[in-house]
Length: 401
Image (cartoon, rainbow, N blue to C red):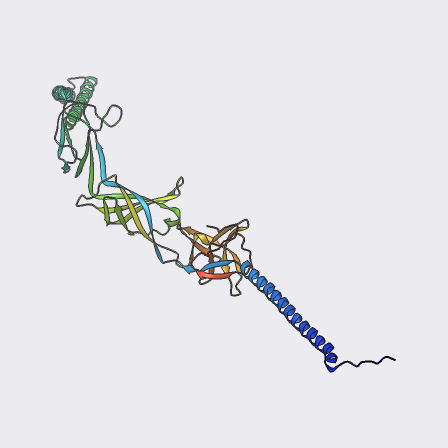
């Protein structure tokens, strides 16, 4: 009969030790697994949050502000003399001599040139002889008519013959008057042998020389002998765009700038306007007056005309890169209090090049997005990153300039 051997105390504690180790391993495994799952959940949440944040476009804004009460516009101007005239001969002949050349300052009535007129001189002598003959015939006819009228009272001559003598006297008187008129005409032509200045000014051109054949008049074969310009005052003509035409006022002042005087302004005054727009250019022609007593400016030069015109101070101005051109019309994007973009339809006024005037659709102080992305939607969430500066990031479509 076999004898059973009972386990020792050490053997009885081994199963308990293995169970505790397994339980401890299971706890560690579960803790590590839970930590890994938690890290994954946290990473996924952070990724979703980052993706959501990056999906919100970053924008720059600036507050909508009203324009200044006045603005300066720069327009090209053409400078012309106050008075300017070409000088032609009034009689035919040959130029005897000229007394003034280009650049000469003359007074009204000063001699410019003399013309030799041999044909006119001969016609003048003939006219004087014709007048003497006509006056002699007229004197005889008048005496005869008076004598016959005296004889008619005594019935010594016929009434018919007396009337004939009277009519002949009237005809002779008319011939004498005609001869006198012809003589006066030729004497006037003789006076035209002297070419004189019509007003005070400067000779700007001399187109003839001694011995040249001179033809009277400004048409046909007539040739301009001299050109004179009065330059003590100058006229400056400017074409003002239609959008500024109503802002012009009488006696408005302007500053003129010339390339030869880069650091100097010449004051000018608005004197008159055409009061009608040119249908081809839609501009209003105005005339400015500038003093040139010192002779520093020259007719025909180009001037930059700086006009300060009043503007509609209640209108808002925006940079052109804030505009959105959509199929439904012109829009601007505004950031609301909820951080969402609102696409507003607007109406434009004047175009200043880098800025435009908004007459309706915006209120002062609203945050307008600068360089809005083309993909921006109405009601889309946006994040403001700066004020007045473009954001560093753009969407695939880029920005609207």
